[in-house]
Image (tube, rainbow, N blue to C red):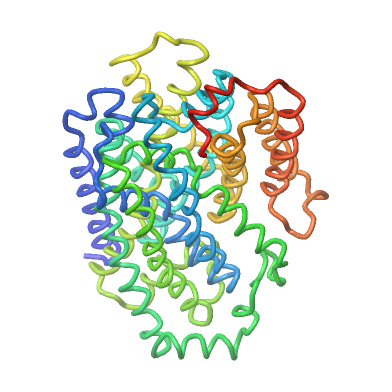
Length: 488
């Protein structure tokens, strides 16, 4: 039997296992809207830890991270930099968000902001910006899954078919089980990909160079620029410090306000569970260390791999490993893609119905009809992201940074909600619109991209300035209402 058939069989076996875990996780909780979206606010520490870790570390980590280490060297260290501090704001804001969620019935991010600023229009605007950020992130996951199948079958299965197969499974269990399916599959997938990452990340340097130290010694002699911060740009020339530092900054700002992760604050069983998860969360960053080792191991041993995001499956299928082992490692890459894609699909559909459709067009929507609409949107949004992914030609990390630029515009709103009583409805809406528009313009007008600074940084700056100016120029909101949110 050809090796590629065995590898494909193992990978398909993993898909089946994920499907069974996801379908078995629904239970009674998935039969109500609150259960489908927030898991009846019953998630414990272990599930919350893995749902946070696995839903954030995705195809960009397992494929894009090694791809950047392989092609851009030290530039990939920005991933380690932002992940360690990205959830720090949650330690201060998270318990209050969870408390308000239980008291006022929130299950999405926009419900909190719309209540604070008493604006259904703001809810709809947040939903639109969320979707604009979600789509490139979903495209990233689907493209990554397609790469895995394409490489393990020697090109016999095209990228579009691999992505369709993997995300067909994701659609089924997210449609059926909601956030509980996401939680339990993320736990399964998180443990699986962490074990494989460390195994492969230590094995490859040993196999190709005699160890991690000798590997970096060899790269330092043959390609020293790969190990010099801030690394290389996409054109092969040194990356600017402005580009590196702004990539870290925009990722830190966006990290804790992604709607699909923010919503998990409401799922925690208690405030203690939430705080434990936040404190322990940085340990998940250790998963990234061997991931980057994988990319660096291919620098000298496998030159010329294109696109660079295929370096992990290319290496594991080229060094003579038993096909069953290769299949397990490729399944690990698939786990990274699916563990984020399922959370994104679930959140995108929930946000569209609860934050856009219901407040603006159907305020009477509730119960089973609301849940069924969310389930229908899971399929439609998945189909849209899949179609765009097939025709896009962007690196996985580039797609990630594009998404972060839009989502980071929520961070000033979060701070204003809890820290600035003088922030007004008009200021919040105007600031968010200004940040979104500036980010779009800076992304698509090359002449404005000074020093490689990420477009989202300029958007956040415009967001804050406009929010402050407009808030000070408009009447303050009711003090009693604002006092329920502002942290004293």
